[in-house]
Length: 45
Image 1 (cartoon, helix red, strand yellow):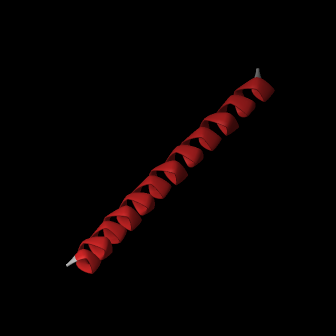
Image 2 (cartoon, helix red, strand yellow):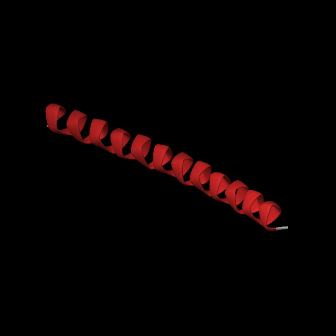
């Protein structure tokens, strides 16, 4: 029974980590986009 609970916990943790990583990737891309736009605006200004 303990083994089963442990496996379930590991599964949930892996899913959470995957979700967090996906969110971090999206945020990083978003920040990079903002950075690129800012650089472009500064260059054209």
